[in-house]
Length: 329
Ligand SMILES: [Zn+2]
Ligand SMILES: [Zn+2]
Image 1 (tube, rainbow, N blue to C red):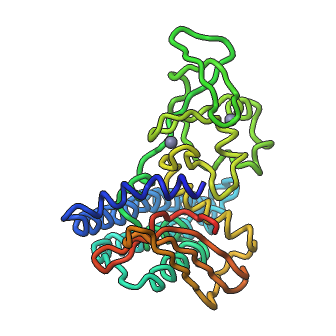
Image 2 (image 1 turned 180 degrees about the vertical axis):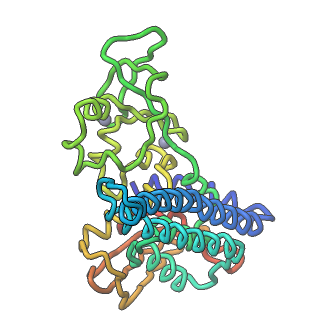
């Protein structure tokens, strides 16, 4: 997997940095990614405020308005909490959007690894923030062409059918050889998220379980077709929803965040900030001296030790990492 996630990207990344205006492109790209991510939180925040206000009104009508409404007290308590949570998110999103243009690249590889991995691995998911926000905070260390894969849906959905329909094409999983006829028109808007997680698969209604069995995903990077079971359940948790053929299809920021969370949970189930005692970076330059294989060893509590692999790029005295994914070394 390491070969695919990193090696397939190296020529593309070098090609990107070879262009004369690459640092400007990197700067502008990161600003845009940070802004759009901050403003996407804005939408959720607005929904929270509206729902919180409605719940508060309902609660007030019950408790003070003399109307007997079911669970009014609960709404009176929960409504304002939701609304204030929304207001907090609005301000933090505005803050993030306002500082999006302050992009600073790192000239020291050790510092970069410390900043990047302590954000994406060591910080707990705070109450109103999320893991994907923490990753976006340090996204300036990753080349923009790689980050673009987290902004779009990298997978097209295909539904397998037992009997051929008109226009149906047979599909076959490139991993496990499962095959069936498919129809592209049905359920084409299925959102691919982590909601069909392995742990809850048996709790899904029969219809969803059936859908999972007959769902195939087509990589929009290399056109490989992989069945949902191979992609969502049988790969190691830190590789789920990444195209096993080209490494380019992802399931967005949420998916990246959940792969990092899975790695955290494999070390401890405590949702606390991890404290780092040391970050050791081993470097092995390749024949092109701009490309360096790096092994990052993080030590600290309560997780012990974690060894990660990546490739670093040394361009114009600045350092970048090839992948934001948790790739174990
Ligand atoms: Zn399969
Ligand atoms: Zn692919």
